Length: 296
Ligand code: RIB
Image (tube, rainbow, N blue to C red; front, side):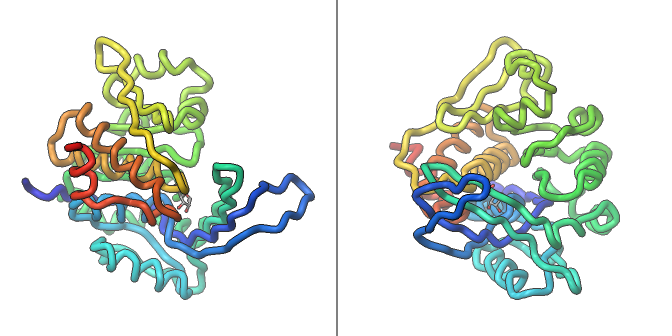
């Protein structure tokens, strides 16, 4: 099978993760249990996951000129992600995500840092690479105008675009029209489609909008009916990065020419394995692991 060639345009960050029994409320201080610094950022997570799943992945992004930036680049290289299009920004800090793991779920504050320098003019210089790819994956921890620019470019050069609209923000109709696939979770779908019912939104965009419902699975409209492809049950240690793993696996499978239903199953299996390790990338599986589990 030919390797899928994928460009990931998005954020690369350091995740500063605190575990605590209790999530502090406003004005409250609690004692936590542990602190760890691990690579993250939705773009980087999707790039690493797709590379572990066997795709040829080209990251397009920015890091700060600090030690986090160096560590982020090292991590890409260790995972086989190509970094020719990741540039350090002088005098700027790398993106960071401040994560509290408490009461079985995470809360995250993202500081974009160098990720804000991924501008339309930066992307313009990468057009040749983008045009040569089987698929482009993008998320929303980078400027809004960059997502709009990439959507228009992909449409022009006829390269499929997988837009993971996370974190949530309203998106123009033009970007929705230009995207080939969109993968909001339920909250993001609510923001995206202005509170319209999920059933209506899915019907409006057959085989384009795939709503990820966590442990329940992924729902879409196939032109005739709504389909829910269930996820796999596992004992979760850390759900951070599960959505990114789904997107990477779904995108890799689509770029390889698998059917939509098979691509979702592949994504669900990879995502379910990802939650069994600590940190966004800690549990991300290899191709062999996903295939072994699917064969069982
Ligand atoms: O999707 C998970 C990611 O979101 C984390 O790695 C963190 O960086 C946040 O941006």
